[in-house]
Amino acid sequence: MNNPNMRHLHELIVLSMEAAITDPQAAELKQLLENSESARREYVNFITTLSVLRDHDFSCPETILPAVTDLSDCSLNLALWNALLEQEQKAPQVEVQKPQSACAVLYETKPVARSLIRYNKISAMIAFASVAALFFMIGYVNRILPDPKTSAAVVTDLIDAQWSDGDSMQQGAVMYVLKRPYELKDGLVKFQLNSGAEIIVESPARFRFQSENRMYADSGRFYAKVSDRAIGFTIETPSSSVIDLGTEFGVHVLPSGDSEVYLYRGKASLIAGRQDQSKSSHILESSNARFVSMTGRVNQVDFCPTQFVQQMDSAKNWVWKGQNVDLTSLITGGNGFDAPQNSHGIDLLTGQMNWATFEKGQEGALGYLQVSYHPFVDGVFVPNGSLQISSAGHVYSFPATSNAYYIPIGPRTEVAMVKPDNIRALNLKGYQAQSILCMHTNAGITFDLDAIRKTLPQDVAIKSFTAAYGISDTAIVDSGQSDPDADFFVLLDGESKLCKKNYRKAEGAIALEIPIQGHNRYLTLACTEATANTADWTLFADPALVLERR
Image (cartoon, rainbow, N blue to C red):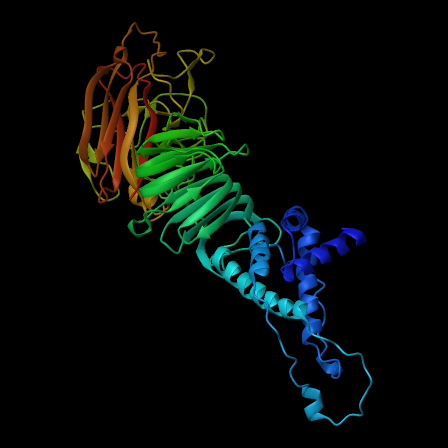
């Protein structure tokens, strides 16, 4: 504000304190304070300075107080300014007598000629208005602004987390209820709110805590697992609010302000619409998803179980988005979530990893070969009659076979049929596979489920084994056999869970799911020749361990 405008503001403030301000002048003062940050700052500076002058004893220089000149932290709501104006106009006029100078009592000084300061109605009003404003501001701040030291959550895990300037939190750090947001530029962070809700945040994300059971998300992906004692936990977004009713749910806030809500377990209440809009309420149940636009429009979308990181463990560098453990990935040294390396496999004669790409038939080793170097594969074998199938000594009786195998056990997408230059893709009729475990007869492999469990977080369990099995429909032979056949076996701890004999290629892909209990340790897959070991390209498509949260 320029000097003439500043003087006019001072005049209006004095008139307001004198209770002599007219309605048009009061409206003008109100408009000035609403429209100008500098006017609001000058307002506080002016009344504070007058209050200091009123209370100052000029006979005692040591009591001079500095005027308020730095009001950078004074960013109060416009409602406060209006309330202060109203308070000042209604404040009663009082007469305040000047107290005896403390300096005059303590020191004997030579009288000094000075100007006589007279206290009138303005001084009294300044005193009362200053005190009233002080108490009003204290009450206002305590009522609407969160305590900057009010804790909301504790960081429980991080993976490659990078925060914006000013934030450098590690595991165990306390997160607070603040007006400013936290900004996660990269990586993942998991924290637990004081209420008991657990949240995983995927970068880039911007969010803040409104209380120990409520947060506001400007952008990013948030997965919430809410305990019974935290029911009612709420994530608010620019376009919606999601209120937990005993759930696990994910919220994706897009840069546009639109949001997507995925309900994994239980129920949640979805309130669609911004603060300035009429709102609609929806109840979401398990495996439901909604898109909420900034205009308040709500559309149903397909539920995708792998949209959010649902579990993480920095000690194991393990991130789980709800996907299954791919057994073909494990065989080739992967973690079960990455792509398998084709043409890598375990040889049935030596038990060692074999990177050969050629195929040939040969007699396998007699008995069970433990694969001690592999963390997840217990052993391999060529099935032929009764034999050991695990390092724990489990035994199973297979049909008698030629004891011959053709290639190592491993992931494979194509093979040379009959002639080396006749390359054909491996696939099952009617099934689109992401990965294929090729076990041309005769072949068997046993996985150590306990070893796999040790890599998982404590609250993630193996639920079942799933796959589609059959003989590749691209298999051809030069022996006149147009419809090759084979036997398929799935065992848990030596106990048969699937025994499909004399399977024919024409049957196509057959899906299976076998439940796995916590006490089951060994999962065995095996294929044997039926009438002949010719063109028996036996496959387990997408062989996987299905995981679930406990």
